[in-house]
Image (cartoon, rainbow, N blue to C red; front, top):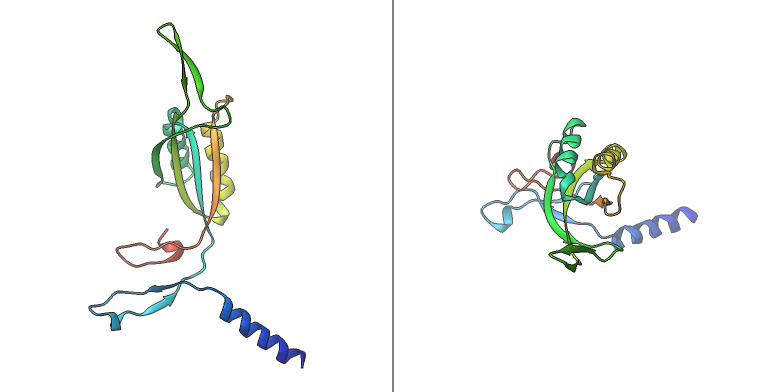
Length: 154
């Protein structure tokens, strides 16, 4: 009896579980598309918001540990300080948004600690505003031109 209840419960859990489905390869018509369940991957996205002056140092450090590709963008942000005050031409001006850089890297789970330590060491100045590092769980990756999925596509 316990086995029957467990199997019914498992069936209900599987039906309620959301699964994402992707086209394997688009054909000439909609009937030729094969649908595959998304593979589970063990990857993380590391996003670092750092001083713009440290971008080249971080890029060089990432190249040394074997991470050749990164997405880099210039952003404006402020932290707990809500900006800084500067003396210009005899007057005091408050800059609320400071220019910073965002570096995004996708790596496997085993490389996360090494990459985070590398970014920390390269971006460190010892002053307020050195930045932050965020780590996200990556659900899936799809390479557009080949339709590869998972860790191969990332």
